[in-house]
Length: 122
Image (cartoon, rainbow, N blue to C red; front, side):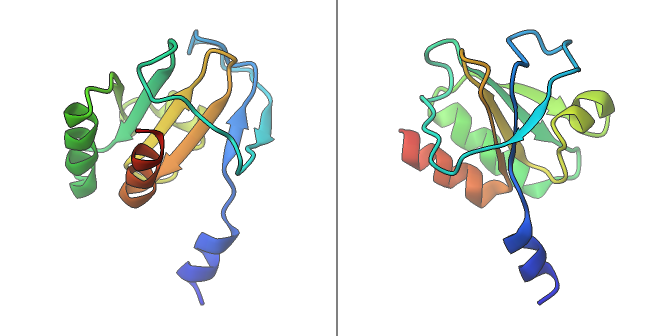
């Protein structure tokens, strides 16, 4: 079981009330709904953060996919911006975080989940 069970038991969180200003660090955390629908990144003023590390082999794949789809995003080095990484509870790279106009936050951890998200919204 090990990692398979750990993967099955993981939770995705949404930081409500974060707003568009990422310096607001006191947002309450609530569990995200699996039925959330999100507009394609870069449209409707949605902010997109891609958490990466310098040694992550899958980060390049995800960056290439985002660039090919003309999606605007901000790269966050998870090792350098520890405060933001902790705020969003990033545990692996790559992780894509989308922040909607209504302050909804969605996290997509690992390349396969990010690719599934991109295929679903485009």
